[in-house]
Amino acid sequence: MTSDGRPAVSEAGSAVPTTRGARTRQRREEIVAAAARTFAEQGYAAVGMREIAEAVGVRGASLYHHFASKEDILYAVCLAVTREPNEENLPLLDAAGTPSQRLAALVGGHLRHLHRRRTEHIVGLHELAALTPGHRAEIDGYRRYYQRRVREVIAAGMRSGELTVPDAALATFAMLDMLNGLSNWFRPGRGLDLDAVVEGYVDLVVVRMLGSPPQFWRCDHRHI
Amino acid sequence: MTSDGRPAVSEAGSAVPTTRGARTRQRREEIVAAAARTFAEQGYAAVGMREIAEAVGVRGASLYHHFASKEDILYAVCLAVTREPNEENLPLLDAAGTPSQRLAALVGGHLRHLHRRRTEHIVGLHELAALTPGHRAEIDGYRRYYQRRVREVIAAGMRSGELTVPDAALATFAMLDMLNGLSNWFRPGRGLDLDAVVEGYVDLVVVRMLGSPPQFWRCDHRHI
DNA sequence: GTCTATAAGGCGATAGAC
DNA sequence: GTCTATCGCCTTATAGAC
Image (cartoon, rainbow over all chains, first blue to last red; front, top):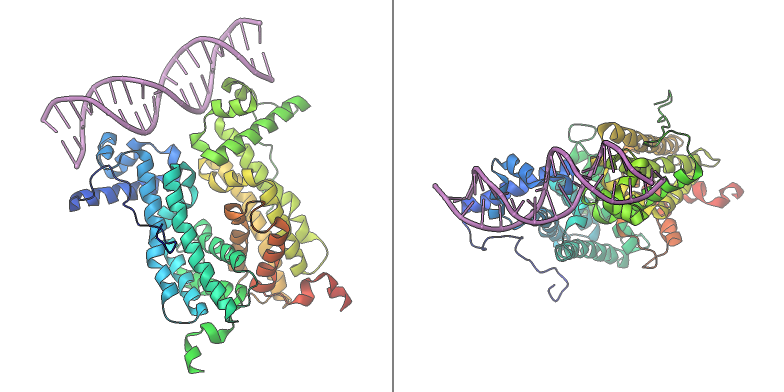
């Protein structure tokens, strides 16, 4: 951890030195992608190294040139999908605008990331119990930091009177569980499209649940 | 399925005839409870039959007197925890009162069941991929029926003008994902107690998200 | 960087005694 | 209803050739 509570950035689990060629890096990413797919479909423990290898087009033993163990592959999947939202979505909370506008942007970014990385998220949300305690703690650190940043923006909106929700901690749990639930039911091409879900969820979360009146979050609030 | 869409009640997976003594039934429940605990902690595929047996105090082979396979034990865990909410919570939607009052009762019943059966819910929410297709379909049927019943009450509240939420289907997903998320973060004795969470979530879901004004859901609405 | 071959052990499930 | 003993298969991971 750094002094402001932000998780320290670490190298993804690797059996090879940090400096490696483009081809090796690409192979690693192929393996992680193939593993995420099979883990998501069958569960981590039900998948063998041979099966991951087959999906990449190599033999099982070759995977050990890129990763030290099967758990190390799971760690790479979970780390990528847990770190990315911190890097891509949290800047939306630092941008200009009211807390309501920034939270609305985060809802959109969060849902779009859940969908873009839906395969990896199924693994990252379901298989954390299979990580070693150290790796588990690191992943949990990223998630807690993300939660804390959201909670702070909600609390700021409460202090300014812009949000009427009574409890920032409870609202943060409710909001993030609701967003993460997208993985359970959203299937592209069936029902609403993603843009419509984002629009609907911004209304449900920011306007209704957090209680932000229109003048604080609509784009035209500056013109009032 | 029955003609009204309600899932047909089936016997839990069993290797023995339906009629059995009280001792055998009790042993089955011990096994299911022990399996739920170990599955929740380590994941279904990481747990061996010998480990489940050890937790009960017997040898691995003895489990096959009560269950036909390891998957059959998982099925019993998932079935119990998926059927119970239909039997215990859905009657709350048929009771007297406004849609808002009935949904508020369901929020409380749902959260209390999630907590009372928290170990089994961790399994039922995470290990569905390990079920055989037939068993998986049956479990999904119960979940879909539960969702449908909630959605219908929300839709009824919308029609009467009591609820102001714009989309019943989206609101149902949001509500149930938010409630089920309790398993991820609630730990008794740390932070709010369960009664406070129920009170807070009834406010967040029914009043705020669904948009029910106080006169429709407060107990004293009859006296107005 | 990938291969073949294999070590060392765990797995689910079964047979048959008691 | 539980036991001991075991079958046949699959697992993660390693050794060493190429």
